[in-house]
Image 1 (cartoon, rainbow, N blue to C red):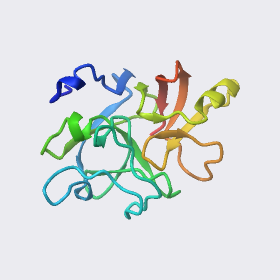
Image 2: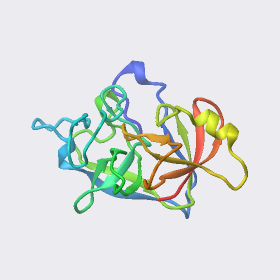
Image 3: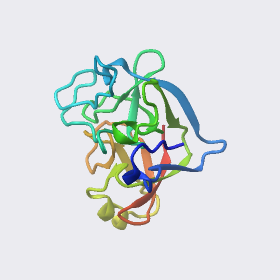
Image 4: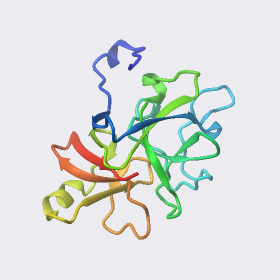
Amino acid sequence: MLQIRNLSNVFQKRLIRPLYAQTQATPWAGTLDASLRNADGSVRVPQNGDSNPTRSANAYSLQGGLVPGTVMIKGAGEAFKVASGANVAERPAGLLANFVGGTLDDIKDNNEIGVWYGPGSQFELLTPAWDDTGLAAAYAAATPGSPVLLYAGTDGRLVYNASPGSRLPVAELVERRSASVIQIKLLV
């Protein structure tokens, strides 16, 4: 349940909504990697220049925290980190289920998070859970049998990449309903 602490956020919606997930998707009960906490216990959004994973851009944040739908990678044990999208060896583990940090924080001082995974499961994502750059044109040009694949972007959000190289796709675009809503099928 979204825990609102500020009246100005009372109409904030969940950014990730399971559509076909009853048997296809699993919310992985994991923990926030220790590198995502400051010494005072507050959430630290990954920044350009961080290592492990090496980042070429700041992770996307909304009101000071990470957003649901952010691509996560598995660290040691059950710990999860934000994907950097820069490393071709990076293996996406799923999509963050919670608002983490900032004024919309779901977990507060607790380190337990949920990460949705499950090939074939389908989700509806609301902005700003993904980067829309180039997605409308790719969806309009898509032909049957040629899916529009989405990858981990440098800011941790899903992004369309026309030349992904050997990066692993995270999801397939099922439908781009508008600039505010997309439906995806997870591939991880």
